[in-house]
Length: 80
Image 1 (cartoon, rainbow, N blue to C red):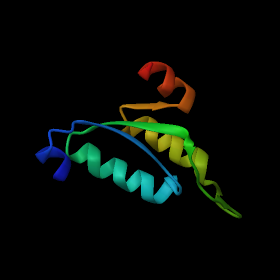
Image 2 (image 1 turned 120 degrees about the horizontal axis):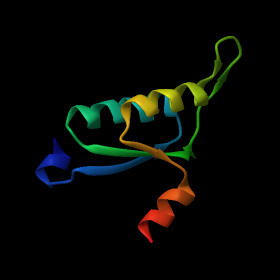
Image 3 (image 1 turned 60 degrees about the vertical axis):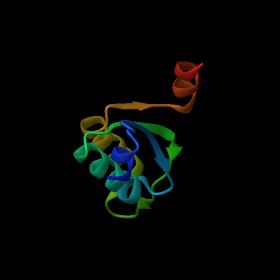
């Protein structure tokens, strides 16, 4: 809601716990029709001993939800 008040329609998202915090924010932003780019190598996720790689799981979800999923280098090059 605060982003909408400021006419912000595009967000670059990254963070420490991608399969929980980052994905939660991503889903909220998409619901508010914000265009979201996730920087895949500026995020992290735990490795679960029985269920597997949280990082790869989150990247798959981002591919379905985010407008784009790029590396830091790809984002920097696009902004240059």
